[in-house]
Image (tube, rainbow, N blue to C red; front, top):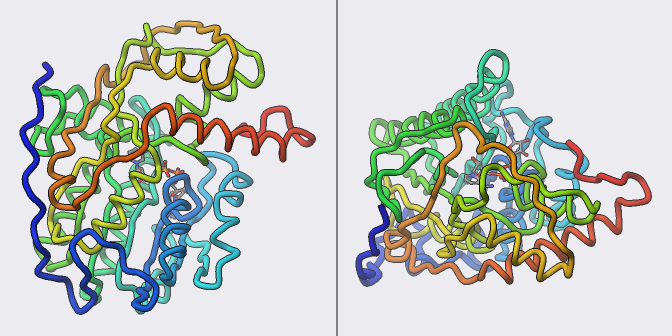
Length: 358
Ligand code: NAD
């Protein structure tokens, strides 16, 4: 069912968070730098977040264990810009296995983006990996943070917690009914984050991102796969009829919301972060054909099991609480990802025909 969104309420004023307060939703600029910790810093969104925080003049500690969900080479490239910045330090740590105390010393804001992503229902060893990187990793981080004077823990949640949502666009109050192991473990982690907020006064905010895309997108994600197939002249594999919809969110818009959520008055809140451009996969393919000047040859596969048919975010709460609005259109965002992809290929082609191979 599709229902229209209610009018947007006016922005609230910010009472403040522990001594480092700026007007609601504004990022803290140089001159008042904070020490931020970003988990999953070598990943797609985490690396963009590091770059943005560094550009704003903050000191950033990036943490990642280079999980083999995709190639370490790509993750190193994600980190390259941050590594060139004086305010950045990197810790090669596993959230589950390693001692986190020294990384967290002096931390004011912690952005927890480390995770294992994927589709479907997993069993056996693969299931354990979701428990490990989504549930245990989050619990270990929370344990290490309890009692520390941080001003905010921002948790990167997912629209996958909604599963086959009962209402579109989906509000945060919708009952989560995940369809995948990933969605179920992201929901479990989200609940743990809220539990530490309620029991130990940890200032936490949960963001539920909807399909993020743009430069550095994970190679397993649909748009990355489509671009790789286009470049290689292959047929593009599309799950189902291509009429399934997603609320595509450009990475800079997701990062802007993430940065704002560290200072806005959103303690204990859960916020949807969507791009405001719900589109079908067929729309994406048509736009890609236009941008690349290439003919698309789709090959339709059976619809993926445990995959949502439609996803669309109600983003009024984020608009209101963060004074935030997604800015990048699907066309401009895809063009930006396409440019990045071409640059990546130009660098990698002499070595490998398929630089994004996991
Ligand atoms: P990504 O896989 O590119 O990045 C995650 C990083 O976490 C990886 O570099 C991995 O090595 C690291 N990591 C995993 N387990 C770890 C552990 N135990 N210790 C330390 N590091 C560990 O993923 P992404 O697409 O950038 O997603 C970032 C976050 O946003 C995730 O929490 C994901 O669930 C969430 N999210 C992403 C999307 C999207 O469309 N990309 C949508 C919804 C939610």
